[in-house]
Length: 384
Image 1 (cartoon, rainbow, N blue to C red):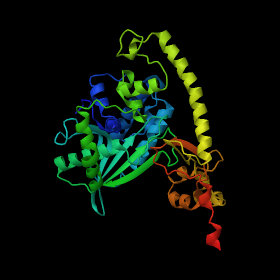
Image 2 (cartoon, rainbow, N blue to C red):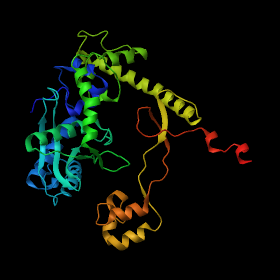
Image 3 (cartoon, rainbow, N blue to C red):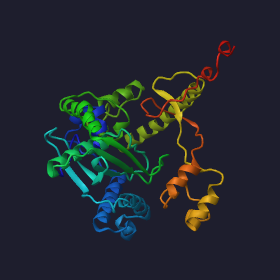
Image 4 (cartoon, rainbow, N blue to C red):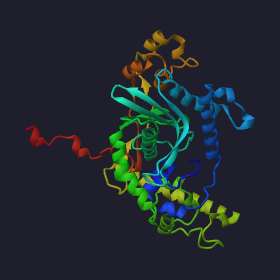
């Protein structure tokens, strides 16, 4: 159960999109960054606190790499899980599952799971803690979460004989900005998850067994092949007129073979590419604003924090007294929601202001904003 799966949940998005990443990455180590090591330590801290019922700040130790920033973030995760302490049900902490009946590599580990009873029958609540600050993780249509949901439902069925009807997923990511706040949830029925596994996940796992097809994209950031000779990335570089780092070094398969001078050279090259890239982004943004079409890009509403409506301060101050303020500043809507009865008041008095337009990849799930001004007017013939 502790063996890392080449097709585990954390890599689901990668091998579903790029099946060749499995065969190309087989046997390759993935150098762990300082950020990944910090995330591992944060998960260990969270698991220890959940097991003994303690709070994260009690483990604060700069010498052991447990900073105040880490304990504050982990505490958000602990607090959200503990909201369900009064609801009976079996719980699992850092629990693994292994479903070889579906596929020999179908296995993984969930951060926290709880089996609960709701009006429609048994349900599963799954939490996934994300300590990262640079990459915001979406909870909707998240392949990793759906993978975990399918695996854990089958584990419960096999070990307890209980069929789960719904799975409630929650991502807790306290250190990265998201308009939905640090705690975000979504619910799927068992039927929806099993259909996804049958139509998308399992065919992708079978294809990845032998495929050498590679596709570049956002998922490359988590692929071990990014440190090796990936055909898709190499093609991208060649199309951009960039000489790849595999063409003039001794070992043609390992990025570690690069000399320090060559690493510095390519970093300088990347800086120059960023200048050109920024110019292209500006030009594309201007043309999209003018209503033109740029293949692979669109305009969507950017992210914005909720603000308080006029009159909210007086109402919140009367209900929560000093609790509604932090250093003489009104708490944010997300913070007020954690107070008793705060969700109802936030729903009534909080709003999201219009955000500036931002350009994203076509694959982004937010709806595109139309810049066609003609659609804003009714033809004069229809008025007459």
